[in-house]
Image (cartoon, rainbow, N blue to C red; front, side, top):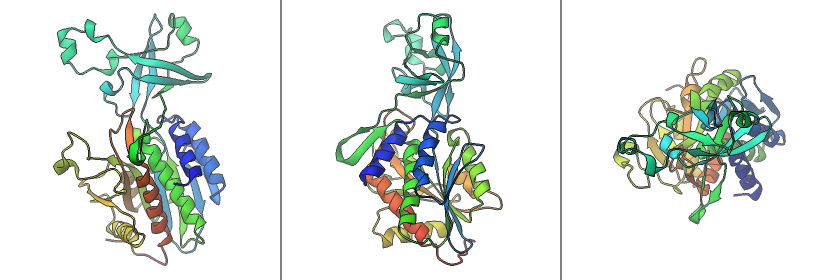
Length: 353
C-alpha cells in the first residue's frame, strides 16, 4: 500500500463521525478529492460527492458510508454522571469498561463507560444482560454543574479512536465499519482517474447516516442518478471461533474482498466484478445474501427507477466493537478491483436482467 494512502486511512480512523455528526471526516474527504476529482460537492444532508466526466451515457457511482456507530448524551445526573442513547446498533457488553471521547463544541472530553463492580452486583444482576440504561459515563466531574460546564445534552460520543497494527498485515480499530469501505471507494476513484481517460462518467460518494437507516445513500444516489453503482462495506469474517460457516458463509481475512450474490445485486455487475478480478489476478470471495442487504447497496438498487447494483465487502472480525479487525491487503485489492471495473465500462451496456 502506498504510504500516503496508508496515512489517509489512519487519518480517517482517527477522526470522529457518528451518524449525523460526520462533518470532521467529511472535511478530510473533501480535501482528499480536491486534488483528484473534477467537481466536489456537499449536499444539504452532508454527503460528499466527487465526479470525473467521461464519454457515453453510463454514470458509475462508488459509495462508501463515512458514519460510525456512536452514542449521544441523554442526561446528566446531580453527581455529574452521564447517561446515553445509542447511535446505531450496540451490544452494551462491548461498552463496559471502555474509554470514550465526548465531542463537544469546546473540544474532545475523555471519559470512561462504567457500571457497578462485579463485587456489588446481585446474583440476578450478574445473570442479566446489561442494558444501556444501567451504564454511565464518568468524566471526573464533581457535580452536575461541573459536568454541564463542558458537556451538553446531544453531544456525540465515540469509543476512543485508536488504530493498531497486528501481525501479518492485520489492523484493528474502532470504526473499520465503514472507514475502510470509504477508503476503498476514494482510493478506487483516484486509481481509476490516474490510469488515464475514463470510459464513462465516474462518481464517488462518501455517504452519511448508513448506520441509522441507509439514509445518505438514498439522498446522494438520487442526486447523482447513476446507471450502475457499487457499495463497499464491511462483511462478517467467519474465520474465528464460534461462527457457523453453514449459516454465515466462508469469508476469511487476507483472501481478498467479497463479491456478494443475491437479489440485491445485479447479475451483470457481479459477472463484471468477477471477470475484472480474474483479469487482474485479484483474489475474491463469493458471498451469498438471499435478501435485501443491510448496506447502502439496498438503497442504491431502489433509487429512482432502479440501479444496477453490486456490493463489495471487506472481511471484518468483531464488527461493531472497539477492536474491529481487517487485513490491509484486502482493502488494497478491493481498490484495484473497483478501479478495474470502472475502467472496463466501455460503450453502451445493457444492465437489464
